[in-house]
Image (cartoon, rainbow, N blue to C red; front, side, top):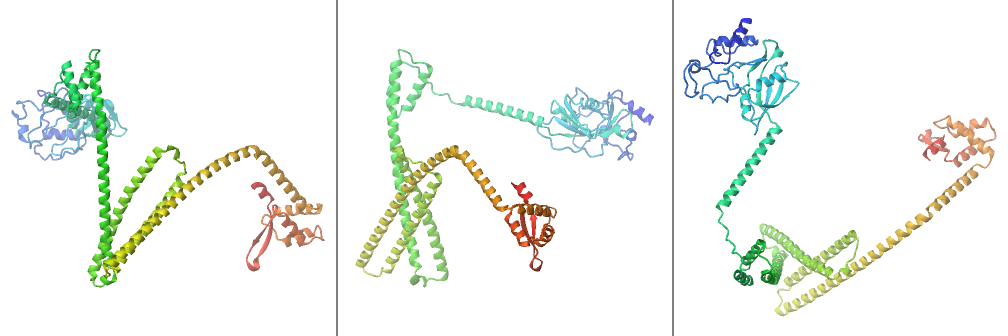
Length: 602
């Protein structure tokens, strides 16, 4: 073992001091025996190809004859370019002051790593020897680059953060190396390193900051490029009296107003206004102000056009609704027994489906139309409130909601009645269709009169409902005023009379209790009996029946009866209570002493 250690110790980093190739199977077996490991794949064959073992010049690697490959871990030297495809990477023994790193078996697959996080500067190092210290770890990995932080765990792993991202690649190169502290063969002084990318918040934050900086630079570059390619804006002429006169004429023209007012704003911002030109600028500002009336007139015309469009839309909606009603009348007519019996089963089914679909569309259309009408009514009510602010009433929200809901239900019921009347009218038309034109005209006149009467009745009902609503609002206001008045009076009465009332109530209760006690205890004999019964029942917590109690008291007074004892106990319900236990023949009445319980509850 000593000879093997000496032979390994004689190997140096320099190319001229090498006496034994690391790719020699014998040297590899000796190194593995020092670490207590069994070599893998050493059956006399070479561990690497002859192209690397044979000395020579390789133009792809840029190496000269007799010079070994450059170790990427040596400080100040960047990473070796990747070898040609199909050739394995040759790793060498690395000697440090406190430890030695032995390369992994080239025949083994390369160590696996996770996906590299963006902006990764932190590596995870596992498989450290148990006796490895933070100084030894820094000594090994500071050859990869500047270390900003080392976070070592109590277990055999740590996290190392470098100053640059490319240093992480150098640290990953050490993954798979076996680390031995000094020349010790103890298990606590050796371990196989596993270096992998680590995801750290600081690295991700710095990466995001760089990405945002690059995005800002890119936006700035694009903005400069857009500004460079943008055509120059038309130059505004300088102020002069002649130009001011021409600008005033342009300000009067509606078509050139926007261009002229831009020039005016530019002149004012440049500071062309002075004492000499103040009057001329004032006249131009006055001309700009004169366009306000034109703009308001244009707005009014647009509003009129919008109102006309609304009216046309509402009329078209009414026409569509009337056509829906006519289509429904067709379906109702076909549903009559005279025509319905002649249709087949499939035709009836289709007619029913079409009728339901038409009714749904009609209802949706009517709801939309009613919504437009409600909006118009709300706008009219808002205008009335704005014209007469003194008529606004403060009512309770819940009461108003209830009134509105009741009015809505009444409106729905009236609308349903109107639909029923319409259906009746249609039915009358269908039944009397065989009569002559004169009879049809008479029925139409009658139907129109009937509809007018129903409409008048509905209007009267709506007026009465509105009057009732106004009355209820006034009653609600009066009730609220009376409630506030009564609350004020109640507070005053409570402040003035609450103390005297409490004293009077307490005195009355005391007098009642005294009167009851005086009525209950009429003689000294009864008081003596109550004391004896109380002490007797107190020592019997489960109670005693009246016969047992009477047998005990008869020893003291032979003239006493069981009825007298029971009447005395019934006079004092706060001191004695009766409990009934059992059923049928086993029914039993027991008396218990409960005065202490009453004291606890009070």
